Image (tube, each protein chain N blue to C red):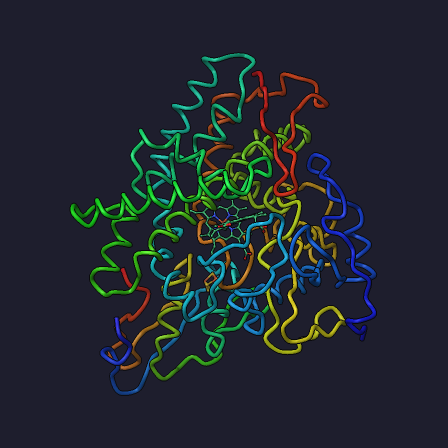
Length: 82
Length: 400
Ligand code: HEM
Ligand code: HEM
Ligand code: SF4
């Protein structure tokens, strides 16, 4: 799905579940502007971000589904997809 | 900082494989000389990284590229140059392909395949037990299980699975084939994949090839060639490695009777055991898929110049004592285990969760059905693979 279609007002929120993350480094390589590894686990560089395809890609690529991208206003989950 | 031009170039790998032993040279390199110049049998010289932190940087940092290998005389182990495929791409092209298959390989999706995998494993163990003792664990269990699993997932009919194995083996596991023969097998594999794709365009299916075809046709996301390459790559990567690791795991456990007894006594250790065995078994003899520096990068105290290739030793990283206390000891209960057995970064093994599940199922099924498992021949008589690609057994006669 295309990033623009899903945008509303105040942007997106990134969350990484540290109990699921296995430190594969996939997200940090896919979206280096948004995720980094800290002591082996992924962490978003900023919790609130402007909508970007890159973060959807990272969430969809995470094997553990540890990354959740949601709309700040509606709280609707944007990625990962089903 | 060392200067590139002064470094001497060593032949790599350093030595022929000796069962599952890692050349002691790596420990010295990690301590004294974390980045050295090496030359594989073919292609240009490269740097080799041996420390855990450096290996992770080379594999994970966007300043290193796989796409930049295209058009270069890549360091490699066979005369053939790898053409295209997911391992020759960088984001965002890589992401486009990877996203599509990644959803089929999440831990959650893989968990759904566990009961069926266990059922197949049980059937195969029935065959193993009926054939002996002694019987060959490689032929009866290690080889057919991963092939069945990946073929089921892709949608390759059981009837075609044997010829499939022959062709895909040509891609990774042998130096015995001539270049022409290997190329012919690879062409066969690609042609066969093309056929499956054509069928699915006529009659949609729910398997992974069907899903890739739908993705292509609906969003025009994948070219025909990309679907073929992706499916063939999944297949090749998806079983040679697992086929080899199963007997390797069993071999290590049988050589560590205390740890094997510990696992028998506490089955909750099985997932930990799989991680520890992934760390402990030095699967790759050599290195491949060099990363090319896109800019000057300092690694292990050495300045790697833009355009230079860097190889990594995953087995060495997995024995790095600064990360793994008592690194040369097998400890199935090891709590903190950031091993790099499935790689790191964007190319981190897409099949990792599947491989983990299969390896867990194998340990479970053997503990259930053959707890008294043992080698049926003296250890010195076990036949090891020759060639410089992966360490593994060609047969493993066992009794129970
Ligand atoms: C532990 C993992 C792996 C090892 C040790 C390994 C090793 C090798 C080696 C040594 C070669 C011969 C080419 C060369 O000279 O470098 C090769 C070829 C190849 N590998 Fe792997 N490989 C691994 C994983 C994979 C994965 C994950 C893929 C999936 C995309 C893959 C796909 C291929 C393909 C497609 C070729 C040959 C392509 C061609 O020549 O047309 N391998 N591999
Ligand atoms: C124990 C078994 C396995 C081991 C040790 C293993 C190891 C690896 C490693 C080390 C890499 C990274 C290569 C690099 O970055 O240079 C890799 C990548 C890959 N593996 Fe595996 N693998 C295993 C099983 C599987 C399975 C079961 C599948 C398929 C279902 C698979 C598919 C792939 C693919 C497609 C890639 C390339 C990913 C990419 O380029 O984005 N592997 N594997
Ligand atoms: S892709 Fe997922 S598992 Fe891998 S580092 Fe990122 S959050 Fe962790």
